[in-house]
Image (cartoon, rainbow over all chains, first blue to last red; front, side, top):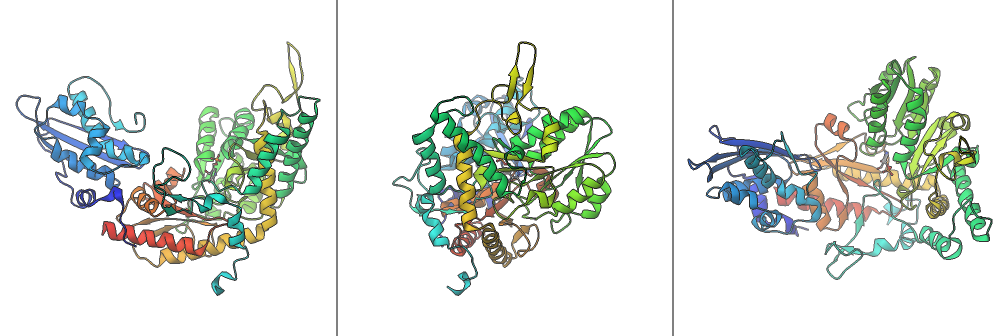
Length: 141
Length: 426
Ligand SMILES: Cc1ncc(COP(=O)(O)O)c(C=O)c1O
């Protein structure tokens, strides 16, 4: 039939098949992990900050899971460098949906926001605002 | 079509009974029911989760609400008597359907299979089990049984053991015979696995369990809807299933228990309806099954379940079984023709009416989203069998499950949609 799916536009599939910034940063300022239990998606995000200890210089991610979660992490890793930690922490789900450029069905929102949540929690842990081992999307979406 | 002739059910006539099967899907989901943006014909292949409801069942519920809605067992007035008779008769009808010769006294209405399992876990397990005792489950238990008995094990100190499944997803009966020892007090086994489709030899398991004096609980959530079941032939001590998987409404499940076993059990919930005499000091319990149905029970749902059982018996459960087998075999064969599709469970000619699989390189949730874009409703996830998925080495799978109104053409639509996903992700 080959009709394709709205949620799987070329961009998403491209990032899923060819993830950008995939791997780990040996000199990361902080890193954090999280999972989306309903899909079994896992994401690890590594962030390196510039000398001002506020501006994001590089982001890498690794993980496993559905196309939405992995493409979202890949896009985020391109989007974040240059932004500050406060800007990261202010992102919300609409920003993620804008970034993905497609409508995400309600059941898949958790997949889409996993990377953003992991990055935000990583930043908050780094700044001493929260203390958690791992992020999960189960409680808050 | 000649290939259809072997199908014993007149699917076209059956589909007339299920208005929902005519709807389209695909648009805005925040307003329920078909809307202007819903353009894809629905292909409903998620029956192992919940089956659709025929007019006959909805009408029985409407008749109750419009004609004799009232509380049961409480009023001398006319409506209450009508409701009570109908509600009690529903128990008898269900007893007949599953071969429980003790009638209503052996049939307790619950909320669902899960609650039936918990009823026995709390009313029997918590009181009777302790350190040194053993509970034997299978590796393919649904969480309804697995999590419940795991908790009872934790609370009582009883140990929980799991009968292995072999590479084809069948129970290893030698392992079962090893595990079910003199310390074993309960064996809880799923009749048909909702993930593998395996039909377990529950009567044989019951024999093994009874030899050591253990009780057997059979989870019939997937078997009662899809084939003739006789609880006495199986010799189950407990047996459970849900109305919403067998053309009935949600909010009702059934716990069958052998009368002498239920008789000896303490109640599970306390309150009105389940008592005979209450003083400020103490209370005595009502007869079976009411002793286990505290509070206002699911009256409309019980009456709906009665109608669902009538509906299935009219089709004939042997016919339902054959229909399921033919569809499962067809789906299995079509999926097995792809070498990038992995199917879980036994071969196509030896399973219940469901097929769980994965398409290589495509996460089950991505696959189900793409199938959804084609109007194909299937289930993706762990189907409440997480440990089994761990054992299979996958986080999730995609499951198509069939019922009396499904056709080969709908399976073709599934295969086309899987093809589309393959191309998208290639
Ligand atoms: C084998 C099996 N057991 C138990 C259940 C639980 O049924 P319910 O959710 O109606 O309690 C299901 C269905 O979800 C099932 O497939």
